[in-house]
Length: 276
Image 1 (spheres, rainbow, N blue to C red):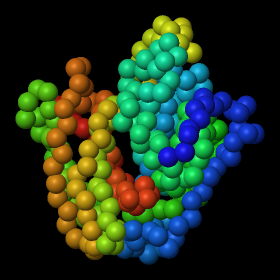
Image 2 (image 1 turned 30 degrees about the vertical axis):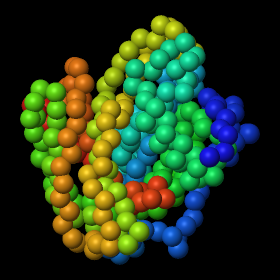
Image 3 (image 1 turned 90 degrees about the vertical axis):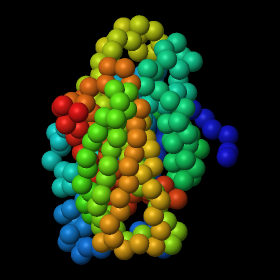
Image 4 (image 1 turned 180 degrees about the vertical axis):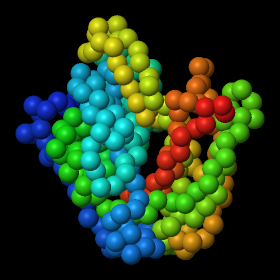
């Protein structure tokens, strides 16, 4: 991997960085939608991944914009599923992000490599694994979503169980609604939490009260699929360890199909029941 630069981007920085970057690899796609163009246009959520940090001065603005996006504040044609991954490479700046993880830093690095970027930065948004932009640039963000390639959402049914007070079991059964070729794809399940509020007593955002939504707390692979039709039933179980203070009413899961080139071929969202 090439040497990386790190940057914390605000609106003023965009003149030196491409606001929107598109990847077009039609010939290398691992999945094809089993639906008409009109069905693809109308159906299927767009997966928006935010890479952020409480240690980055400009991330709170991006967090606010993406939270509004997840709440449906913008009149978009397609539904949007938001996942916020907090990276850990700004922790040295005086404030350790309580939701930051090296695992999410590695995930961002895979997109940097896949999109042929030279810089890792926050706040960054990746749309459908194909397009990226600075997260606090509203026009670029909405443009990326509106022009994103669409796929039908999977048709999973889900049940939740709590085998112990420290674990959550997610059982999924359904069809992908997308044909997967012999190169294969992974079915991923993210457990996220919203409504997080904490004071920031140090670092670049010292003195601020920070609000975060759709924060990914856990990410697991349900299974890997290869050479299957869009209508074939897929089943699996994911076990999550839960954190102290876990409150299911603030949490949800997102299921998404991602191939080895890190492109997304469909996603589906579920809210956890209040009483789980």
